[in-house]
Amino acid sequence: MEFFHKRTSFPFMSTRKVWYGLSALMVVVSFVSFFTKGLNLATDFTGGVTIEAVFPNTADTDAVRRGLEQAGFREPQVQNFGSSRNIAIRLPPEASQDGPVIRARVDGVLRQVDPQAQSVNFEVIGPQVGDELRQSAILALSCTLLLIFVYIALRFHTWRLSFGAIVAVLHDPILVLGVFSVTGTPFDLPVVAAMLAVIGYSLNDTVVVFDRIRERFESNRRLDPKLALDQSVNQTLSRTIMTKVVTLIVVVALYVLGGPALKGFSEALIIGILAGTYSSIYISSALALDCGLKAEHLLPTAVKKPVDDLP
Image 1 (tube, one colour):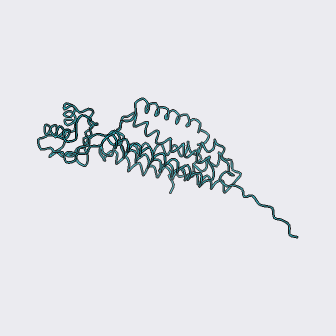
Image 2 (cartoon, one colour; image 1 turned 90 degrees about the vertical axis):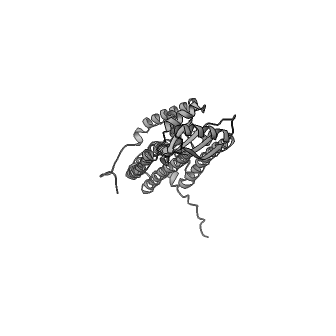
Image 3 (cartoon, rainbow, N blue to C red; image 1 turned 180 degrees about the vertical axis):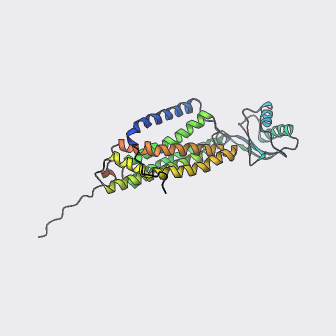
């Protein structure tokens, strides 16, 4: 099954430097926003209080948010989850008060909005737990990148493809972080899970293209590397577009219909899928070409040992 009715022959490698510039611009903007504005870290990383409440009718999240602000809570996050009658409240840590006092204050606000409203779940996440979760997230991302480099190097016998793949999988989560920093979308553990999924998804596309590059060199060792890469990307283009479109349909449905609880997760996946499609073509493959990729790097020529003459 093909997305295009005829075989494509787009000159991807000829325009790669233009896309290098676009990528560099997006990465710089992401870093500037990240280091100046930072991320809107959720209570998973900062610590704080998470409360789930149930209302007899549709919950007025704006009224609850205003009530919490009037009660002295800083930057309360209130959103629906599950149904319109259920809300989740996230409060930043307050060192001066313990859990029962905070819960009593929140219950008072809920009863002001609706006398029959009640909190059903109350969790306090300490700053130490938030620090541990942050360190675990950084460790998970670092180990993933290291293992990807080793896997690509062993599978394709050359560091040139490994270098391109690593830059590509770094490129995608950096853009995700940049968008989250610019928009101020809460950054929580589900977003970290989405970023790991994005890395794996992007790597899968990259490996498919790399496999096709090796096949092209196997069929003709004298093939010009630039032409081999263009042919490989064009031959996998239909598959790439169809799989990404199908995946995006599901993820966009999650973003639109999943509610605030899934917004960050689905938003990170949407950004990562789009960035991964672009990076598997213009980052991983193009960098391998600029690093001097040739047929002998993927298909080493066997060295024949001289055989001693028989007496």
